[in-house]
Image 1 (spheres, one colour):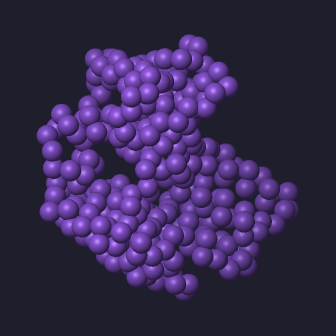
Image 2: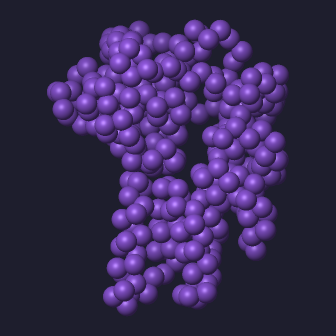
Length: 297
């Protein structure tokens, strides 16, 4: 979870060398570690060893880890074939994992196939529709984006609003994505964020990634849209309020987007600050321009 996949593997081998027999839960942790650090070959080896060496029958969670392993590494076709050939029917979580990978890598054809699977299992999940919209938006297929939005309206599906929380001086502050609030705290965060973005452009070469803004609008408007993401506001507020050198910790209810991820790495480098973001799936520890997830998330 914290990006120390190599250490997890080392601990597994140390455990095995002492004669301690691993169980299914240990292998879930091991496969998870391989997935989140891009160790595809090692993950495949451990998955095979489960049955062949330790006589452990893989569960749906283990198969899900393998789909995640292939998907995060960009081996989308292999992930899809693996999910289709599983002896256990793939559930919505597994297909959703693959849809997220398709969105990340911009594979429209496969994303559409996976979304059909999800429509049969969980047709009212807002996140699935948004992920498919992301794929279309990156490719600038605005008619398809609009079609997904119409489908959501027809099914009365509402998008889950994004929020981020940060603690400053023992007080919790919550920021909402895309909401222009008049609250002085939010205004303060926006002003600091503008200052940060200007410095990142000058010193870090930052260019906002506007591809996933789900509307056919001008580039400047797209930049305004992604600059209002809740985690950016929370971090900007933290930089403005916390003492220099103090670690910034943010909790977010959704998965951090690619642009925010890039920006957090740049902030950690340019401002010489460590930022920890706990999003929906994992911890991201940004330091010296790098993230603990190694850009696999």
